[in-house]
Amino acid sequence: MVCIFTRCCKTPKLAALKEEGTMLLLTLALGFVMAWIDVTAVNTALSDIATDLHVPLAGLVWVVDGYTLTFAALLLAGGALADRIGPRRAYQAGLLVFVAGSVLCALAPSGTLLVAARLLQGAGAALFMPSSLSLLAQSTADEGARARMFGIWSALVSAAATVGPLAGGLLVHAFGWRSIFWLNVPLGLAGLALTFAVVPPGAAHPDRPLALSSHAIAAVALAALAYVLIEGPAQGWTAPAVLAAGMALLVLGGWAVRRERADTTSMLPRALYGNAGFGAAVAMGFLVNFGFFAQLFVISLFLQQGHGIGALETGVRLLPMMAVTGVTNLLAGRVIARRGVRWPLLLGLGGAAGAALLLTGVAGAATPNLVVAGGTLVTLSLGLAIPAMTATVMQAGGRAYANSAAAALNANRQVGALVGVAVAGTVLHLADAWPARLALVFGITAAGFALAWLLVFLHVQRAAARAPAAPALAD
Image (cartoon, rainbow, N blue to C red; front, side, top):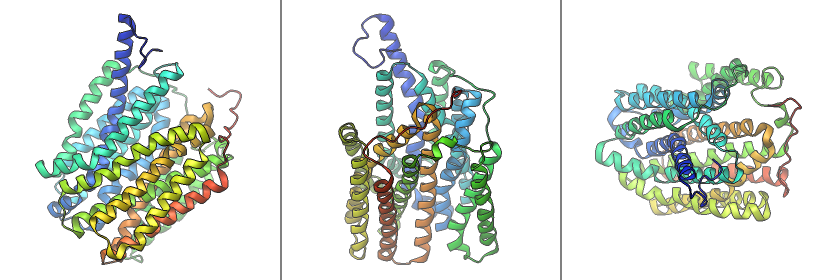
C-alpha cells in the first residue's frame, strides 16, 4: 500500500489500493470523530440536561467528568489489551461498548443513570482510541504514505472537535439533548461494519503482560481524586464520604507510585522515566488539557446560565474558539520543521498564559463576546504548542517506545481534563457571582499554562529530545 494518497496510482490495481487506504483511514478516524463530537457537544447541552433531569452543579460536573474518568483510567490498559488481543478486536469491542453507553445515555431517566452511562462510554473510548492509532500505523510500511494518512486523520479529528459544539447546539435545539447521544448509534454501527470489511486484524501478542493490578489501583485512585474534587464543595470537605475518598487517594496513589517504580509492575517502560523532555511534555499535556477543558466548561455555563443563551447560539459562539486551533496547528508544523519544538512550545504556552491572565483582569466587566474572544486567543496559542508537545513525546519515545509514550501523553491529557473540569466546578460552588468565578478560573488556568512554559524552558532543548535506547530484545 505504498501509493496510498499519492498521484502515482494509475493502474486499476493501484487505484484499488488507494481506495482501500481511504476507506481504512475513514473507518479508523470514525471512532475518534464520534468521541470528539460527543465530548464537545455535551457542553452545549448542560443547561438542558440540568433542567430536564433536575441535575445540580455537581451532577453536571459528573456528566462531563464521568466519561473522562474511565477514559483516562483505562487508556493505558486499553493500549495493553489491544497489544494482547489484536488492535482490530479491541477497536470493535470499544465501538460496541461506546454505542451501548450512548444508548443508555439517550435513555437515562435520571442524572445518576446518565453519569453511569457516561462512565461506560469512557471505557469504550479507552478501548478503541489506542487501537485506532495502532491499526493506522501498521497499515503501510511506506513512511511517506503513513505521514500523509496521519495528517489527514489529524485533520478529520480536529474538524470533529471544531464542529462538536455547533453540532451539539443544532441537535439540542432541534431534537433535545438526548439526540447528541442517539447520533453515536448509527456512526458506531457503521464503524463496526466497516471494520469487518476493510480493517486488517493487526498483530496480536497473547503473552504481552497487562499489569492489570497496577491499572486497577491507579484507576481507583483517580476515581477517589475525582470524588474529592467534585463532591467536596457539594457535600462539604469534612463529610465522611469525602474524607474516606481522600484517604483512599493518599493510600492508593502512594501504592501506585511505589508499584510504578518496580520493573515487574510498571505500566510504562522504565527507560522513559529517565528522559527529562518526555517528563516535561507529559506534564505539559496534563496542564494544557486542564486549562482548555476548565475554560470550555466555564464559558459554556457562563453563556447558558449566566446570560440565558440557548444551546444553538452557544454552539455558534464557541465555533471560532474551537476552529482557530487548526490554523496554528498548520503553522506549528512549519515552525517545528525549521526551528524545532522549543520555540512553538514557548510561544504557544506563553500566549495562552497571557490571554488567560488578560481575561482574569477584565472578568469584572466580562461580556459573552469578550469572554469568547479571550478564550479564542487561548486556544489559538495552544494550537501552536500542542503539535510540538506531541512531537516532543514521540521523539523521546523513539521507535522502541512510541506506543507507550503516546499512551502516557494521552492518559495524562485526559487526567488533566478531568481535574480541570472538577476544579472549575469547585470554583463555581465557592463563588456566587460570575465575575469572581471567571477571575478565579482564568487565573488558575493562566498559572497552569505558565507552569507548563517553565517546564519547557527548563527541560526541552532546541535539539530533538533524545530517544531512550531500546533493549536488545525489544520487539
